[in-house]
Length: 193
Ligand SMILES: [Fe+2]
Ligand SMILES: [Fe+2]
View 1 (tube, rainbow, N blue to C red):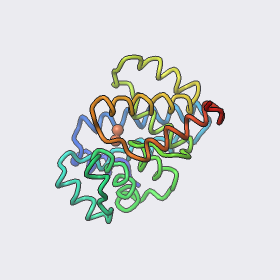
View 2 (view 1 turned 60 degrees about the vertical axis):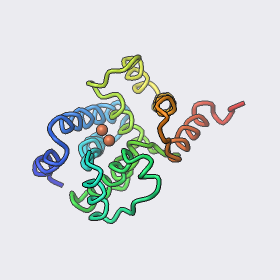
View 3 (view 1 turned 30 degrees about the vertical axis):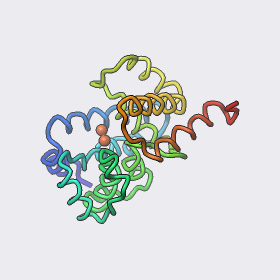
View 4 (view 1 turned 60 degrees about the horizontal axis):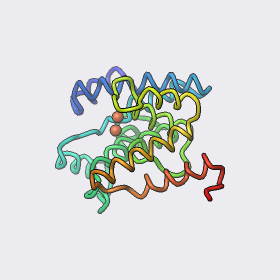
């Protein structure tokens, strides 16, 4: 890994604005890692590479998936915006030399979430969701909650995202639903009813 060298290459693919977002996520993730007693360097790296394959053009995204050996599934046609997570993890491993499985999973699942997320995975998901330039109703409260309870913050973030997708008549990935139900179990300690 060579962040300085990789930054130029990644920026040429995703653009300056997206790169600025990436650096805000990396900084925020590092802060959260310190706050929760996790490895700040790992959090920074996961944040740094999380959107490295955020390619807007669908044909180019498909080509990148072919090049990196990611099989295109039917779900990808329904929700192409989730592909860059899985593809980003493959790129981080094969192109940028990231070997740490936890970092790679945090990149892979930063758009959908999944059941059984590690704290690093939660931190990347939430840093992406609420980085300093994000602006939505209640974002300050969300940032406060992120520092208080990662599971509760994940549960709320997934609920919001799923509600938003329903309102837009958009496809919801199975992984997101599994993640949401997993956090429901965690925040209610298994006593749903
Ligand atoms: Fe992303
Ligand atoms: Fe992002």
